[in-house]
Length: 544
Image 1 (cartoon, one colour):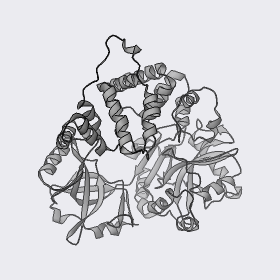
Image 2 (tube, helix red, strand yellow; image 1 turned 60 degrees about the horizontal axis):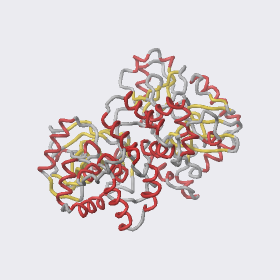
Image 3 (cartoon, one colour; image 1 turned 180 degrees about the vertical axis):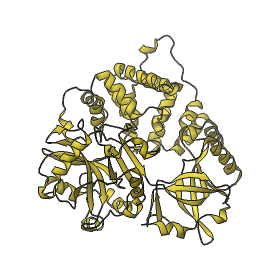
Image 4 (tube, helix red, strand yellow; image 1 turned 90 degrees about the vertical axis):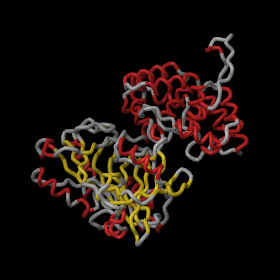
């Protein structure tokens, strides 16, 4: 724990990427393999025991620290509000244990990071509160401040230290000499922290599990300049930007797998796609978009239809019929075991079109190539883009024809040229404090529209305001709170905000009957009184 706490402190204090990477290289070089594997897991966003493992709820931690220190609940809450981070608050409320100065630091017998997790925390996950409390309180009294701080962050799941998974992978690639793309590929999907995994991850030799893994996804960047500045239109492939689930379809010897961009293997959830992949004539890895699409229809169903399938591990006949799935394929990454990513997009697309040709026996209702969008010039392309919503798509994708298939979000070759967002004017009705560095400010907002004389919640948003606006709104929220519901405050219906969103669908899961996609704040409408905000009927009229 001592070594990992020192790494955390160094990463937290550093503002330079190069210094963070150097710190990571030094840690992974010197740490015991088991500790290094757990550090990789935690820095990559992993939780101890997974999402369903309860070690300590935030309310329990507040209660336990109050009991151990004799601090009343109201003072614990006030300290948390002042500090802003629960893990740091818990660490500050306790004194450090006495240290035997007669022993050098390296000679003190203390559990390692792996020991703390594997032998103390993981075994009590979901146990009775008394047992979990005993383990955690015992740890508090053993650890010095910086170790206690990191320990608390493991409990609260707030181990955010300004290090992306990509930066960790860069450090591992620098340390091992293994290509970063292979490291990223091996880290996709579910893996278990352990010395064995770390050895496999950093091995320069092909590993047995490599065959089932997808390639790291290449991501497009939003186009924020005039498309005409990209150069001649002939150098670009234009496609529709589909509103589905990005995935890779893998057909390799003895292996058919579907991987989402969220690094989740979706085998069994879309059996019609797996069956269509089995009928392909050649082994391949296809990059595409998973959509709900009725056979014979001109366009996809709303994203909400696809959502009914996502969590069904074994969908029944009714689910299959209500939202039939289809993959729109727009890239071919591998063919007959040959990695095609270094070849140009035009070459890859030609091979993809041949693989999915009508006379190839492919089930076009389940796997079909993404059609190219033809335009005479950039002005014509902009006109076509405006038709996107009518077709159930989000805009255009612009891909340089000579581009290789890279990994991550590398700017310059792939752009997403989305239509302007739909917008509504909504009233702020609830607010909640943020997390991390914004935990002392109200930055998570809920907005409502008028339905008769009542404001009905329709969207939550937390981005779009600048720092000055956030501070001003935070002060207003504190002075105009009507009620408190745990961490949430209801506020006077005064302020109107213009919200943008990508789409709107009908939904039985929401009180309003409407679900909006990717809402964010466009501007604070201080010129508009709350009574003039939009009505729910206006939003319903936009729904698919």
